Amino acid sequence: MQPLERSITGAVGAALAAAGLRSRSGLEKLVLGGLGAGLIAVAARGQNPLATALKIEQNDDGETVVRDAVTIGQPAGQLYAIWRDLAGLPQLMTHLRSVEVLDDKRSRWTVQAPAPLGTVSWEAELTADEPGKRIAWRSLPGAQIENSGEVLFRPAPGDRGTEVVVRLTYRPPGGSAGAVIARMFNEEPSQQLRDDLMRFKREQELGHAPTAKGQSSGRAALTPPNKRGDLV
Image 1 (tube, helix red, strand yellow):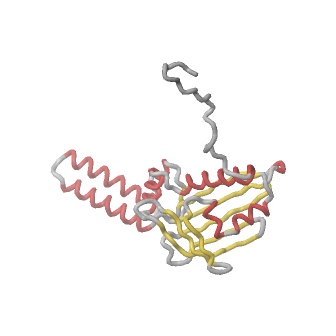
Image 2 (cartoon, rainbow, N blue to C red):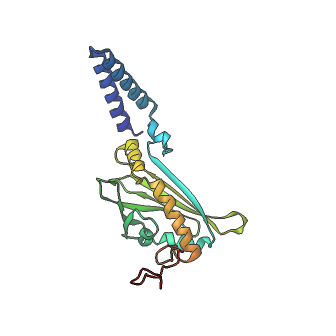
Image 3 (spheres, one colour):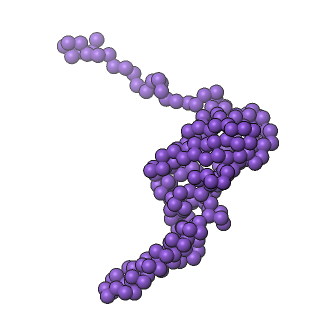
């Protein structure tokens, strides 16, 4: 949990515990006191139990960590070149609306954030650029959502192509509670990243993203009945 989130959680817990002590009702004392004590314990540990239950990973700085990998049967140089084209990243990552390249190092990113935020933009800078091996970036000071990320391109075992590893960290609006809400509404980046990587794999290995559009359902078409109701 982020420091501000821990402070708020602890303050709310203390207020509920105090309200329980002042209450004349035994049930209210039990409920408010228990809830207050629970929130104080959560703040002391610095971990949101719901985030833990939903397997939302967070580092010691309170940032949410997202990581995933996929093996693609293509050379690392080819895959690196696609990711290095920052302006083309929205074609790979569905939550990205646009990436505007400002210069050799800086770019402006716009993403589709969970409601009610709509779209969110920030400037980022490249922190590493190793052709065929690694790309890394981080948001610049003042970003609405602080974040950083890297993509690694490694030889896959058994000469099966390239292992593409993506690691992201970000501070979600609302702290760990915001990450939990985003997960509940299928807007959490770890879910989106898995879908994006699998689609990227299919596109690179098959030359296109498979779709069922225009395909037959596999059922034979029925000949329309004539006026007497018999099949022609």
